[in-house]
Image (tube, rainbow, N blue to C red; front, side, top):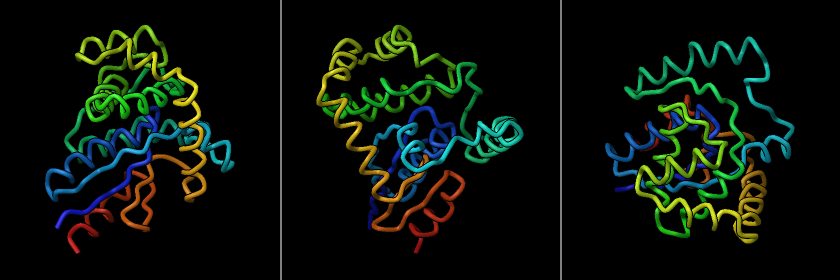
Length: 196
């Protein structure tokens, strides 16, 4: 029997990137249906009083130099430190909603995640974003134009507010039914639930 998992994400989170990759593996293994829920992590942080671990220098250094590479090795996925981190993802998250509307969200999400965390691209720069999307046969012009429409901007705000109302305080956050899992390092619990 297949299960459904909601994945609340922001492309700027390196732990959400790892969750994206690991959830792909779990989806293949268990027939898990992963529903991507874009939100603006900066908005979540502001609303909840939370902040990125990177703002604590020792914690940020440990996470980037040791913890994340260990998980990347565990999952067998490529991950590189992005020299432009932290990236302003406002336009990317709007474009993720545009990609849903244009029916190319799965491909868009995979391309953007790899651009940031494998190929080390500055995806806060619209010219770079346009070039990356075009290179992967995505309609950059349509996606970026739609991402700037007022209703798409409003939708990202409302989705972020809804995430906070659901109890989300960071990324990645996942739900199976009403059970919440925060952090890619909690995916063992998701797998346990899938095996139950």
